[in-house]
Each structure stands twice: as structure tokens, then as C-alpha cells.
Amino acid sequence: MNALPANPPDESHAALLGRLGDRSIVFVGLMGAGKTAIGRKVAAILGLPFIDSDQEIESVSRMSVPELFERYGETEFRALEQRVILRVLEHGPQVLSTGGGAFMSAQTREAIAGHGVSVWLKAEIDLLMDRVSKKQNRPLLKSADPRAVIERLMAERYPVYAAADVTVPTRDDRKEVIAAEVVNALCGYFGVAAATGEVRS
Image 1 (cartoon, rainbow, N blue to C red):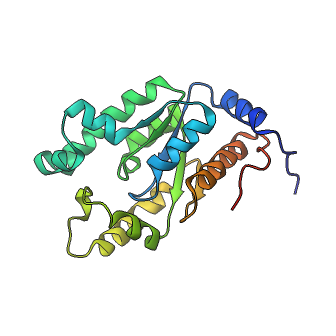
Image 2 (image 1 turned 45 degrees about the vertical axis):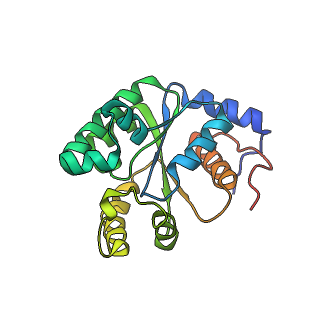
């Protein structure tokens, strides 16, 4: 294997940012995958602003995501989500975390492809269930059988998430470890030699 020689972190990050230009790093994946937590860490590593699309939506609408779902239904929520993401993508470079259903819209995928690099945080069901069971603000999980809902969403969404530019398996490990793996995967995507000594499991 012709691996690129490893760079010191600063050089790798500078080279990665140079290749990224004014595009955004866009996290996609199911609820509970850690898009916001890992996205924040990646933004900190690279010195980029971080934006969470759900928080942007709540700021624009002055309503919480569960309230929006309840009042307007999923279709209207997705239309608002799409408008917000398209607007945010005009202002890169940045790290953007998107809601679990955002990447399912062909128009949103097209906008992300045009203005960003997509990173799928791929998680196994037990990890997702462990995380989402601790929160009550998941409109799609208001069900007698949340695990069945997650399984259905995985079956529907994972083939679409697989179209992301970069896939990084996530697991129950320190956020810093997963974030460093994301940065190294992005370096690989852009053909930049990854930093040494960043990933410690």
C-alpha cells in the first residue's frame, strides 16, 4: 500500500482547509449518531465555525423541533429544514450538523454536494438506542416500539447515507477519538497526508 507519509497535525489541517476552500463539512446520519457532538469537536480541531441545522431551524421559527413536527407535520418541517440548510451552505467554510432526515431530500443532497463534503457517521442500532432512549425530544420516536422505528429508519436511510463522500463508523468511544478519525478520513478524501499521533483508541 502506498500510504502518504504522515504530517504533523498543523500541516495536515492547513492542507485539508486549503483543499476544502469555501465548502462546508456536512455531517449526516441517524439521530443519536453523534453528529452535533463530533461536529463540534471537528470544528474545534480545524478552527472552523460550527452550526447545527436543528438549532438554526429553532432560531428561525422560534419553535422547538418537536413543536414544529406537532403543529405542521413532517412534510412542512422538511421543507423548512431544506431552506435553512441551503441558506447555511452559502456561507462556508464551516462544519454543519444536519437532522437525520435532511439527507433524504434529493435537493438537499445536491446542495450539499455543490457546497460541501458530506460525512456519514455510521452507527449500529444498539448504540443509537442507548443514546436516543435518554432523550425525550425525538418526534419520530413517539412510538410503542422505538427500536422498530430505528430499524425501519436504518433500512430506509442507510442506503441513501451511503452516498456521502466519507463514511466514518462511530462507536461508544471518546468524542476526541472519533473526531480525529473524521479529520483523518477527510484528509484521505482530499489526498492529504493525515496527521500523526492524533488517533488513540
